[in-house]
Image (cartoon, rainbow, N blue to C red; front, side, top):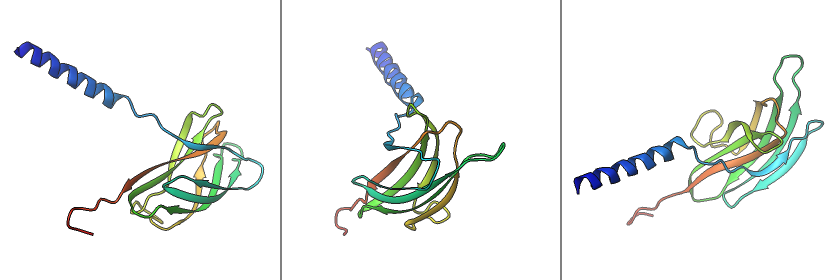
Length: 145
């Protein structure tokens, strides 16, 4: 009996370690082809947020890195306790080459303000951009409002 319990415990630990070793798949919403010749304006909506944005791709000269001048306004849904919005740089096949946090209230410069104005380094081989986010509802404890 004790041997079966030990084997079951080892199996559970093995599954837990395997789950930790494999990162969760990243879900990038609405992949947008990167426009490299002129400013591009767009709106992206999910049930958790809306972002209105304009970006301009700036090619690096010589060995300088390509950059993206990104401006926008993000409006998270009311009632969210946690909200983080990320911008992903993707290759032609949709594989993530790089990621930056665009909006995270309480996490540094400009945090919590709806306006975004950033100059972001673009990884080589980027063909598309896309967004992902984390959103959690505000918990209301019993007896509180």
